[in-house]
Image 1 (cartoon, rainbow, N blue to C red):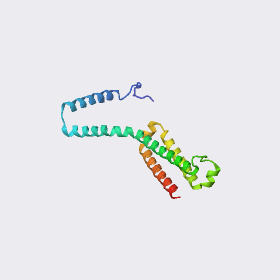
Image 2 (image 1 turned 135 degrees about the vertical axis):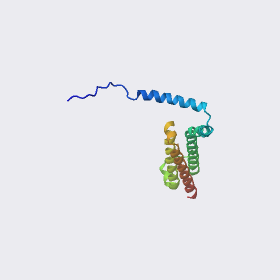
Image 3 (image 1 turned 180 degrees about the vertical axis):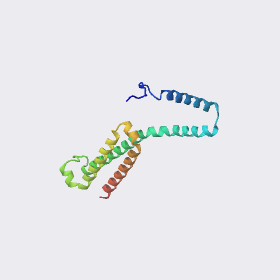
Image 4 (image 1 turned 90 degrees about the horizontal axis):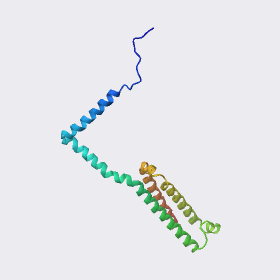
Length: 159
């Protein structure tokens, strides 16, 4: 059984289309420059201005999140220093058994503060790209950790 179909060569079938689309794109660009369409140009310009204005905020978010995490970690360090100084008058360590037996509620607060600090350090250690891609999640995480920190402080001073 013979066919009348001739064998095709391995040439891209859309090579003519590509050159046509490229030429069409050039013509469209030149026409938009020649023909002044205020109804078309203004929204495009406004969108570009908005994107330009928002770009620094979006790119600075990881840096701002790092600064907030560092600030929270500094607050935790200050609180841990105060706990240690007030309970031991500057002597002894927070990890000693005597301290744990004498001040169990302060020990729980110190452990919770250390957990929060480790979680903040983990977030801070992520790569810039991960921070940029998940900046909203990180912002929510930081605010939840800040609330958690406030609760620990409140519980510590009430007890």
